[in-house]
Image 1 (cartoon, rainbow, N blue to C red):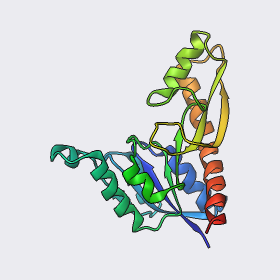
Image 2 (cartoon, rainbow, N blue to C red):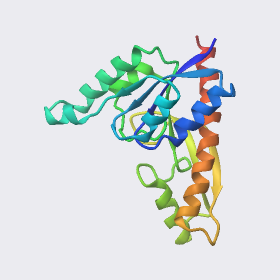
Image 3 (cartoon, helix red, strand yellow):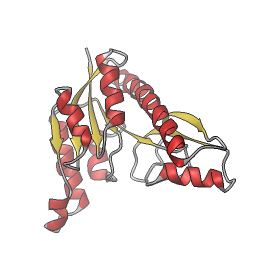
Image 4 (spheres, rainbow, N blue to C red):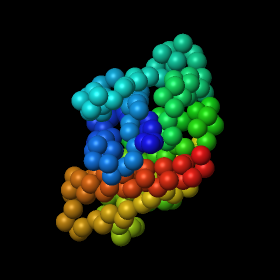
Length: 202
């Protein structure tokens, strides 16, 4: 029996594509039950449509415009996602910090991809910040990780990681391309690890 994934995106969805490819090729014993985006123009929604995967566009702006809280948004989002019965929720470029109103509904079943190693460059622009730190001589390499999600940003328990070297002649663009290639591998690895833990507790 295949496990069910909910994949959350906000942008181009290249990591979503890595997951879709891995499920199609049966490298992951799972299927993507729904792709969730908080941005209507996210190209990841096109990828989902091309793969025949259900989509959920769920923006925060209507909540903000009507004075409703992030917690209210997160609680309603959790309710919508729960209808797909996901075994695991994968944040693959999802640009919204989830509160306990969401996380408590899926305790221990939400993982996030972050383009930095544990304890480094939490938050946005992590690839650029890592590259600039290397140029200043502060680090010798960077990397990417997948971790379990807790309310503190990019700070939950590690699932998997990959070290990505930075070369002396790297531009930001060349380092970024190598980082994205590593992300596509580590996110598939991490989904497999996390699903093994989920199914062991079922």
